[in-house]
Length: 252
Length: 347
Image (cartoon, rainbow over all chains, first blue to last red; front, side):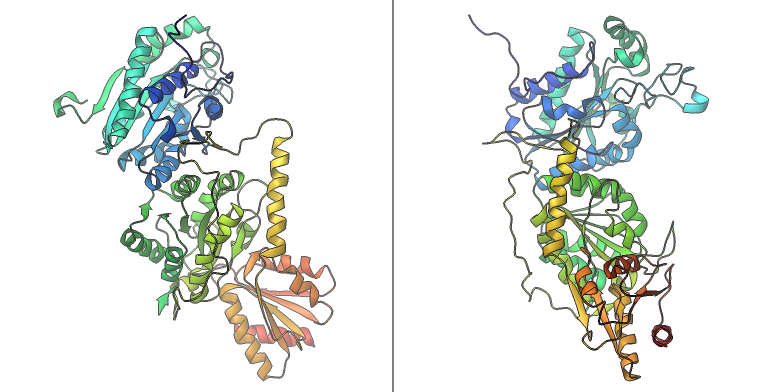
């Protein structure tokens, strides 16, 4: 019998700890497939976040390091500057990238570091029990916004990718999601493009992936898919945010 | 002739520093600026990071990738680095951190001080750990100790702190560059780095150890390193202890003041000796302990409210009185007052 489909070499066989309906498993796999297809497994170094994906190094079959919360872009900078021909990427949640790590994120992009950031945006802090994230929606209930996020107290969901797109140093930024097979295929395409930009030494790339968190949102896995469609995409529109390869008028 | 801050930088260059990440803060800016020029000249990595936090995390990254990496700052900036340093210890990553101390707490002032002794010698960040702490007392030592710090860091896979102060950073003294052999001329094989898994199994670097008993085991493993450091890495200078009645104890700039006070006292016929720790951790407790019977007392001089004095007291184990004279907030202990205190003690 012909084998048509199997686990990517860049994914380990270890059973992951993610909840039913969580997006992490899908996104880990997309990254693994892309790394296999580009033939870069043996020169890739990944940086895991603090968050539900803190154990990502157990699930990927290449060199992966831990980093302090929010610091992956600085760690990536250190690695890439001393090993410029390796492929270095970070995998970060919304708190990691846009709360505690905002400065590291902005300045890695601003320096135009030739790294790739995969930004998993699920609008909540999963690992620590469902607290508000910088990308939590207005009126969304979380364990630290039990009455719903009130802009007067807690500000607005932050569109960090749009902000990074304003920086001269960023080359390619796109927002995708994994709430359907069609969207997942588009997400993989974007992730592959981001890694290709790094391989071609073109500079800083980031893919923001709107991801499901049924547990954090208090919904079931199927409802979580709809949540993204009906709520998150309104606040975080999908599509290319920045692409230096396009002409100026096509950029946001 | 070299400025202390520049000597540290050149020590880094000669010590094989491949990547330097820094952030401006007085009184060590000359060091960051020196590296901005010299590292680029040597074709190595220099980044002025967006913060001291980013800088230490860049050191973390460069180190796990196998490079000799260094950062520097002054007291408030070193506070910012503590998280990163703790992570480096947990992940067993080498690196060199230079603290050109200034007055504190808070924003403090920009004068040299010695108020970060506790921070440097008691780990500094969260968790149960130690760093080798090297305390230069001359511009030559600013160069030598920084150079040797890289070997020590690699030897133990643990960060090393060079603890100086703003006065040493600014002073000009003659320095011999590259003429002395480092005590250790070490190039360890780094079979733990992350440089891409070609030809080998993938590796991971991490300090999160959740499984039952694993973190305890890891801490015992780290402790073995500290025990070895305590046995083999102590450095101390002693002067005129053989017939001394009082021993002054000081490090860095305070030691220079102690030397002057010792000379002045000897001229008056008072038998004063000096113990100058060069490693603040591991602390030279043996030298202190060996002299408790012979000496009447120790007088500890620091530019602080008294931090190293506690280690001197611990080392005497109650067998000998220990006195303290110091000035915090950038104040400088005075030679005449030291001699007065000695005379008072001996009465």
